Amino acid sequence: MEIRSTTDEDLDVFVNTMHAAFGRFPETPTENGGVWWSALEMDRNLLAVAADGRPVGTAGTYSFELTLPGEILVPAAGVTAVGVLPTHRRQGVLTAMMRHQFTELRARGEFLSVLLCTEALIYRRFGYGPATYTRRLTVPRNQVAYAAPRARGTVDNPATGSVELLRRADCGEILEEVYDRYRRAQPGALSRPHRWWAAGAGQPPIAPAPRYVAVHRDADGVPDGYASYSLGEQDTLTVDETITTNDAAYLELARFLLGHDLVTQIVFKHFPPDHPLIWQLADFRAGQVGPDTDWLWVRLLDVPRALSARGWFTDGELVLEVDDPFLGERARYLLTVEDGKADCVPTDREPHLSMDVSDLGSIYLGGTTPSTLVRAGHIRAHDPAAPALADVLFRAERPPHCLHWF
Ligand SMILES: CC(C)(COP(=O)(O)OP(=O)(O)OC[C@H]1O[C@@H](n2cnc3c(N)ncnc32)[C@H](O)[C@@H]1OP(=O)(O)O)[C@@H](O)C(=O)NCCC(=O)NCCS
Image (cartoon, rainbow, N blue to C red; front, top):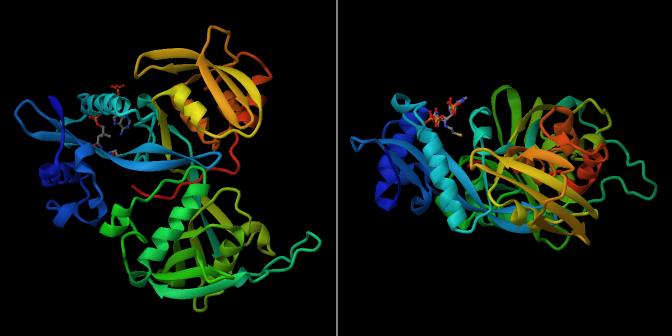
């Protein structure tokens, strides 16, 4: 078997092989691989080819930017379109493609990759760990009432702007611009490169399916938020995503959506962890949260670079021992955080914490608490004070959240 890079000419064979692997797509892709795949970067994809010349496996990469804690933007390889034909499974094809991909990413100087899993048992062996989480919020329309703010001097719903209703087909540029401002300040968020919007790739609201879009504008008329939604069965209003650059815009959009007539319930997909909206409802049980699901999985390919790249909010020092069985690497690092920046260098000192690289991926963005993984038996604490220090150290300014589908 050979693993080779693809070119634009391989688009049909790449998409057809992937479709056959997933078994859920039509045999023949429409033009440019179909709308789901129209942002594929054919110079960054791999094809596994059997000895008889037939393609049997695919793995792709998108060039994203990931927002790290501290509003730091770094390149992130978004692994996608991973599939192996049912006839060639469990023979090491995926393993070979992953190895090839990591070698290429390192050669390009990239220090992390991210992906979304179809099944949670596939990727840990390759060093990925779940790092961001997302969930739905469902609110019955007849339970919508707001709590008066209890902080003295806070005005109940100070109107800071206006909401305008547009059709998706008429507001692509606004969505692209607002999303880009939002993602630069949200830890865990991925960029949506212009090619996605231009091609209408992926899922709504990038893919221009029939949708209404509520656009929020600030007091100066500048768009600072939007919610893309549709009305479906049983009069359920489903919100694809609510993207805003500030809390006031989120609340005003939520009030607009929750106030819709002829609706029995409102479902917010991708409700961020720790969001204040639930606290703003008078009935604390009015908002039903769930199901929770993992979203972005992170794989670190260069631990010192990754740790010194992100922003930090508390000073401290830890020795981390990191085991990377898939790449056959094991090392100890001294992590020293001072004034928001970290220095991370190899050391011979005794470790405070020992962990698998996949668990380091899980705690990297601040969405998984190190002490939880200690309690689960995955991270080993050699010093009883280390888990609490690691919890404080690895925390982000707010929980990381990603809702980009790829
Ligand atoms: C998932 C998939 C790509 C695996 O490809 P593969 O070539 O069979 O994988 P490998 O042979 O390299 O397997 C490597 C290891 O992972 C394990 N593994 C592979 N797929 C697994 C799965 N779905 N669940 C649990 N373990 C899995 C294998 O058992 C093997 O374990 P071992 O090293 O202990 O023997 C393939 O089954 C597939 O195409 N599935 C449908 C599409 C899909 O789900 N793609 C993933 C998109 S995120």
